[in-house]
Image (cartoon, rainbow, N blue to C red; front, side):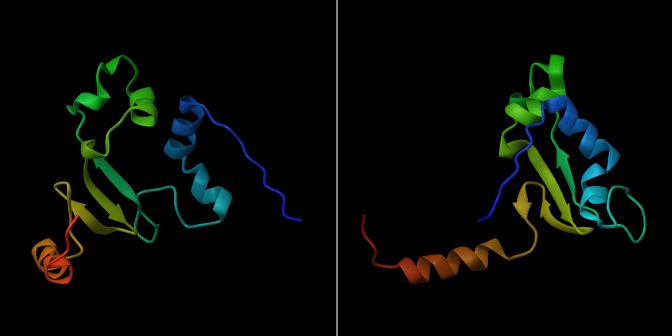
Length: 108
């Protein structure tokens, strides 16, 4: 039998965990600080995006209402994978050409 244990966190607890690097410590990973030799997953957010307004409770907006369109850039293990809201790890034009070739003749 497999047991599952769930812990519900409110937005403030979640923010504190992310801010203090608790997740990395809990998982035993070299994470939690922005420093050489540490794992770094970072997300840049457009604070002017409508989904983050009104700004009275920015953390609540990020947790409960933020649109994926507010994410501008993402780094995973220090490698930039999203730049300016677009995937940086592949050639989108080439991918779309392949999709068009594979789906040529398809009808809905």
